[in-house]
Length: 251
Image 1 (cartoon, one colour):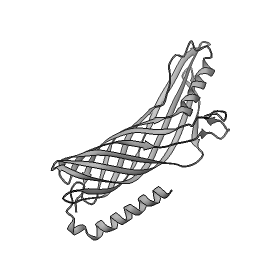
Image 2: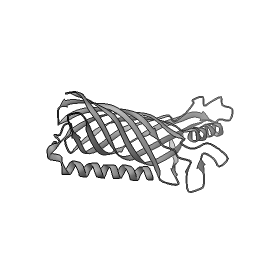
Image 3: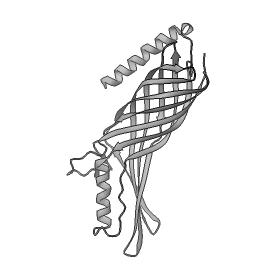
Image 4: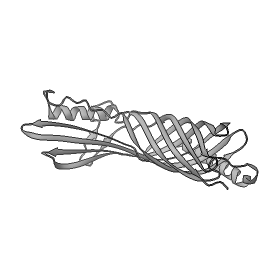
């Protein structure tokens, strides 16, 4: 929580300073405001979740002769939409404050014919989240900027769903959720290519996400991982990349 408070204070101070002195800065990419949309991939390490799926496969196929697929959740993909609250640019550097919403999911399924019944189980991990943060960087030349560092606080809405099918008829879906809010962090770097200076640019970002979820559960008391396991449902985040299109409104 201390990190969140410090980041919010920094955003407020920088925003206030830029608003008070906007006339003297000279605005570049995205000016004081703008919005963006793009595509993201995010890696993560989910030992407890993958252990649970392995146990499900053992229940369906104890002999391990029918279901041979190895299911692991390792990477989510999805779309991102957001806004630059401001992006002010001086001669030698720029600074931004931003917010976004990330749609992120990964799906897997197993299928087999067991006792003359077509059996299938579908799994989906959803890690949609809000993010707010700041970045700063320097121009390399007139058409390209280097975003030296970006730091975000992220607020995850995590959900794991499991749905069973017998002869293609759904037997119902269950959804596992964390028992508390999940706060994560991101630190990264990137490049900004100006297609139309001050109005349109392409921004690429690569970095590392920090996120940990001890367990996921449903109302009946079933948890991921099981109470006897020492693993965490989601132990840590990983490398992520985002490619987005920025549209700006300079002042």
